[in-house]
Image 1: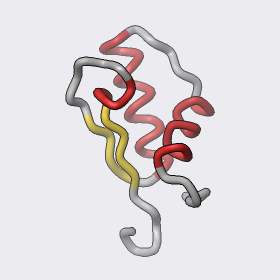
Image 2 (image 1 turned 180 degrees about the vertical axis):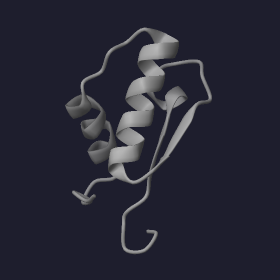
Image 3 (image 1 turned 90 degrees about the horizontal axis):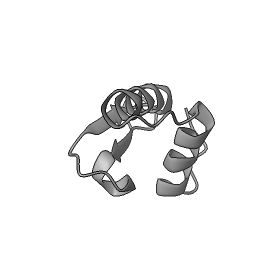
Image 4 (image 1 turned 30 degrees about the vertical axis):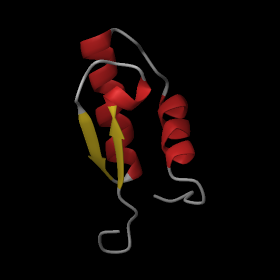
Length: 65
């Protein structure tokens, strides 16, 4: 946590891509960075809700910011 805000990380390779991209930050930043990267680099247009679910599954118990 940074200043009381939960910090998250999504790594492209964890979701089936041969790619070392990492999105780090609060939930909103990670969601936008990961969503944008996957669309631009891999051609997949995940919804914001889908990426949020990736975060919630990776960090169970944290519904946070």
